[in-house]
Amino acid sequence: MKICLFWFRRDLRIHDNAGLTAALASGVPVLPLFIYDKDILDQLPAKADARLTFIYDEVEKLAARTEAAGGAFLARYGAPLAVLEQLVQDFEVAAVHTNEDYEPYATRRDAAVGEMLARHGVDFFTYKDQVIFAKDEIMTKSGTVPKVFGAYLKAYTAKLTDDLLLPYGSADNFTKANLLPAPAAKAGPRPTLASMGFARKEQYFPPVQLPPDGLVRNYHQTRNTPANEHGTTRESLNLRFGTLSVREVLRQAKALNQKLLAEIIWRDFFMMLLWHFPNTATESYDPKMRDLPYRNNEDEFRAWCEGRTGYPLVDAGMRELNQTGYLPNRVRMTVAGFLVKHLFIDWRWGERYFADKLLDYEMANNVGNWQWMAGTGAISAPWFRVYSPESQLEKVDPELTYVKRWVPEIGTSKYPAPIVEHKFGRERAVEAIRAARIAAS
Ligand SMILES: Cc1cc2nc3c(=O)[nH]c(=O)nc-3n(C[C@H](O)[C@H](O)[C@H](O)COP(=O)(O)OP(=O)(O)OC[C@H]3O[C@@H](n4cnc5c(N)ncnc54)[C@H](O)[C@@H]3O)c2cc1C
Image (cartoon, rainbow, N blue to C red; front, side, top):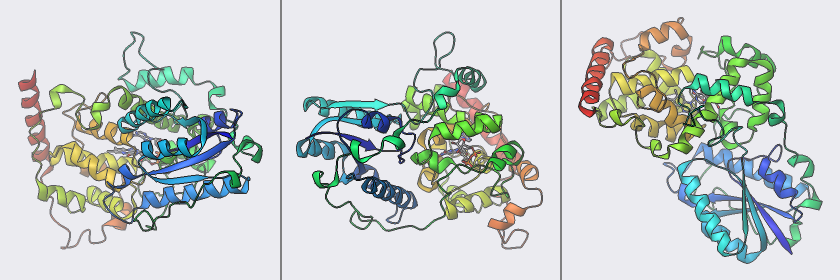
């Protein structure tokens, strides 16, 4: 029997899923598939990984939902290319459907998968699902890649008609009639965390649901108060793994809060930039900022990682990150600015540390924001701007409510003295960058 595969990746939901909708309408039974990518899992630093636990639980929910609808669900552990090549031999596969992914590794992987499937005479269809506008759908009037967020936002919101935010009908069509029935599927057992060599890591995950309307309405007033755990939406993890769709999230923001709408659009913006400039995943965008004489002092880096810099907002932030895998945006900016300017350590060290720790780690957002803070990006804060962690603290946590939650020894002799004096650190970085820019021009 001819079938098609729908390959779930970072879109772990049945509802409002562009590629799944197309697969279900293709006229051949759909066999949903998830591949635990060995190449990615091999790089995880610890055997108990919270993100993998989240993915595993969500994949199991997809499988249960598929089986309840009368269909089979496949999950495999291995290198995607090899797994898919085996599947097109085990089944009579007419086509593989999947949603686009814009990260450099994913675009290379998908190009290789497309070639392999073509050799086997299998169609490979990919769909835009995780953003509203991708690749070069929004360009400047002169046809170049937009590098000014204000102008991009204006063009984006002008194009953002309500019909682009309508949900796809995948949930309604996810029925026995469109799925490959379980007995026909030879699905075999699904991998477990243990069978892949991992263990569960219990951690708080924000619920898989839209934030309350009330929170969204007040977002512009509450977003910069890190002590308030309900001051921002906490939808980043669900956007990362596609457990919420970007359309439902944007529909809510568009109706209730323009500031939130703009923040979510930063995500499309950074994905667009990473797709155009994949080298910026590991290299500064600005050539004049590529050879900075970063100090890269390992002891100071460790003090930053462990929240022992003597700057309360930096230390509270790093400890929250280490313990929960989350950090509010304003504090992400503060800790990042401190690393790249006051300690004058390469932004890539910080970017990698965040990549290991953040539950919502998203290469485009992480690289984009780190390069913004370092002044090295396609879009950046001016390279000479150095935020003072002390004045940030006065602005966002004047009563030290947030700081005391994470740094209980604040105000006692156990709390360290500042690792570097603010004015000295600022001038050291600015002078070193100025000299490097002159040398490079
Ligand atoms: C140094 C640094 C590193 C970051 N790394 C990541 C990362 O790896 N993954 C990630 O999703 N976000 C990252 N961000 C952006 C932002 O901090 C988080 O998206 C946000 O804090 C997540 O919490 P929330 O969902 O409650 O955000 P909210 O404030 O409620 O915003 C809603 C959504 O808008 C998007 N968004 C908000 N701010 C930004 C932004 N500055 N850039 C891009 N998208 C944004 C996110 O998808 C977010 O979930 C980083 C920011 C900085 C300064």
